[in-house]
Image 1 (cartoon, rainbow, N blue to C red):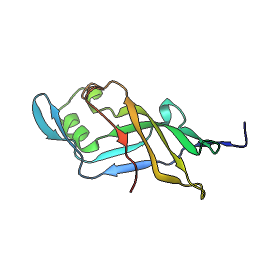
Image 2 (cartoon, one colour):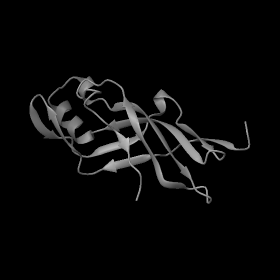
Image 3 (cartoon, rainbow, N blue to C red):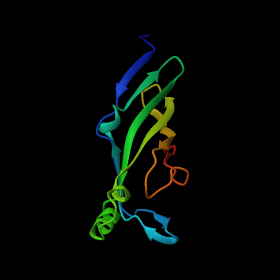
Image 4 (cartoon, rainbow, N blue to C red):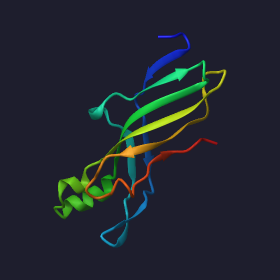
Length: 132
């Protein structure tokens, strides 16, 4: 490996969206309730590379998005387990490396989502937007 390339693993990554999101399901607008976003270690190791020659960092996150409030309501109604399973995907992101080794505005990128019984992968978009 070149001295200009530094590989790293991503660990302990979590995000919580307390308000959730409105979604259309079976023709009705419903709320997901709070969302929990984190690493999905069951599908692989999340990792990245800092390329100092190019001044860019890139990373691949194996992610899982769960909606425990909505899942609990569906489970109480004996819904199919595939409806309440977490959404899984691969988030690919990149960002500029600054002289202090931080990322300019953070990493940004998009996520390729696996198929899910409740949400179509064509209708579901997960993105990391540049920080402020």
